[in-house]
Amino acid sequence: DPADPLVVVLVHLSLSARARRRQLKYIAGLIKNHRNAVVMGDMNSELHSREIRELLASTGLSQPTNVGLTYPSWRPKMAFDHILVTPGIKSGESEVFTVKHSDHLPVAMGVDFPTIRNVHEITSTL
Image (tube, rainbow, N blue to C red):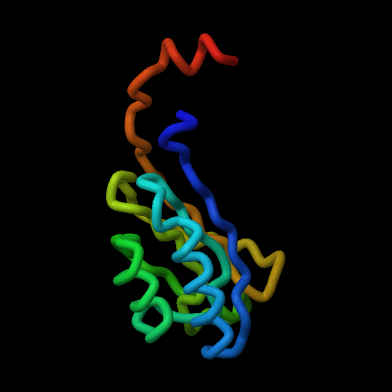
């Protein structure tokens, strides 16, 4: 719905906490006026970090119901990769895959998006 789009932001944040805070403030600005948003990727930070807590507080993004360790992929000790959604998007269980294609393990999460309100209007404009 052009009036109420789904905004997806893929991230690979800095190693510096100070730089991550700046990056996440920018991302918060991008999604602040969108009801349906997903922010996901390598955040190089755990959910309890200051910068992630600030992002959650300023945007209303929700944490996943379960968190898996993703870094380093050969012996995961930290949860650095996340999928965060706005309250209108219902999130399911997240899962970390043990496929080693990177220094981080991939994460997936089931989500239910809000129902499209004006299907006729949208299809008639395509």
